[in-house]
Length: 153
Image 1 (cartoon, helix red, strand yellow):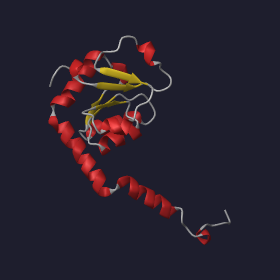
Image 2 (image 1 turned 120 degrees about the horizontal axis):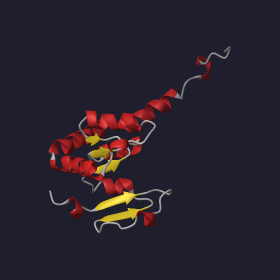
Image 3 (image 1 turned 30 degrees about the horizontal axis):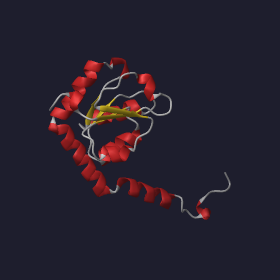
Image 4 (image 1 turned 180 degrees about the vertical axis):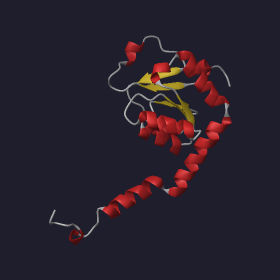
C-alpha cells in the first residue's frame, strides 16, 4: 500500500459544517456538503462512518470494509457488530486521534480478511434479498382482515 496521502478521499460534511471552515484540505481529498454515497461506495476501498445503519448497510451491500466511529443512538451497537463480524474496526470518539485513525485505516487496507468478509456479506445479502423480503413481510402483515381485530378493547 502506498502512502495514505496518495489515496483519493471524499468527505461529506452535511449542512452543519462549512467545507471552507475546515481550513487547508490535502490535495488528495475533496470536501462537499453532500455526496452520491452509493456511487462512491461502488468505487471505494474503505468507508469511514459514524456507524449509521444506512451507511453500514450500503457499505456491506457494496462489499466495502469500514472504520466506524460511533457518536450516539444505535451507532455504538452497529459499530460493535461491524467489528464482531470482521467487516471493519471501530473506535470510540473519545479515543479518536489522527494516529489511531491512520493505524486503523492501514490495518483494514493491508489485511485482505476485512475485504473478504465484507464481500461475503455482499454476496449473502444479495442472495437472501434481505430488504425486499423485509418489505414483503411488512406488506403482508398490514393486509390482515378487519375481523381479526378485537374491537372490544
